[in-house]
Length: 267
Image (cartoon, rainbow, N blue to C red; front, side, top):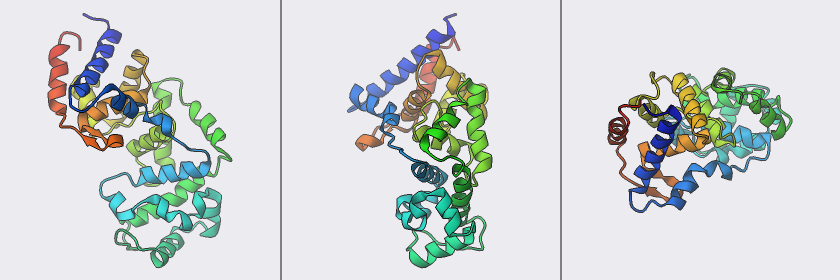
């Protein structure tokens, strides 16, 4: 039986080869996507709040209801957490009413519907602002995050913490916030990552919690950044090379079977 680290490296390389077998995908295009975390330009806690609210709205149909978060900058005090709390007296309904009266929303705004995406979003603004107001600058937040890097168990604790602190930010969306805002040692266990890692047998469970830990372990086995592993297998599942506006017809199930057949004696 082949060494586990070698098997994991070979599976990673097979994913690369699979994507490069499609026209017009080349090494440069693939590298640009799996290393896109380097383009994160966050400079402040205000940038973190913007990123966190973008992740909160990164769920089915919510983006089309809320629209671009950047358009809400005038109502969100340039995304300054303390100023938001002060201006609206820590009252999400005041924020909701201000937006409704001064902005053309992309989706219906109904204040007495607790399941309304706008209600959820406004509540998220305040819980996120309260959490981030603990940090006076980006460096403080960086130091806070780095305390969770010890292993996969401490790593998974941070998105679990954010899930409890920020209304509307589930575990997977908390992972999305971290990995897309300059912290490439985190992954997001989305539908493609879960299907592939569970499907080929690396994860024995398809729960977000377990797949997160398994992808972290897989990444460390082959000495690759978790973000790069996450994005590579996400591309296998989605075929969406969005930075180049290219969509290829990958087949996730076919790839899973290809790996299972090729490594059936080692998985």
